[in-house]
Length: 118
Image 1 (tube, rainbow, N blue to C red):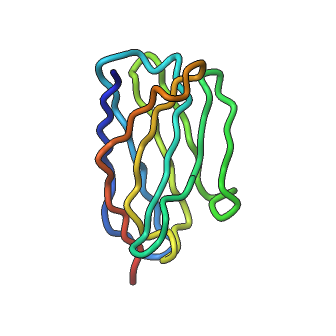
Image 2: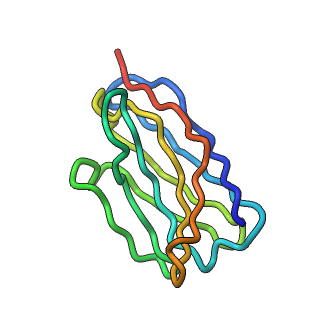
């Protein structure tokens, strides 16, 4: 079973940048589709970005051109580079691992808070 721990959240002014990291333990990430999701107060959890084990990416329209997801399978780590942050990006960001062949095998991190405010 994969265990995920996010880090890198914090407070930043609009237009600023943050880099989130998601470190995995318990199993190699090479067989997993990795994703970042976020949940703002009163809202449902929503997809931010995903990346397959061969590097194919998908982004929510709201973050295209501003966020970049990447992975380092050797380090068992996934990243989310967030640039030109907006107040509406404020949310708890969660890392997700979903097995590419057995999608019911998935894990979530505990979340990390990102606050964008002046």
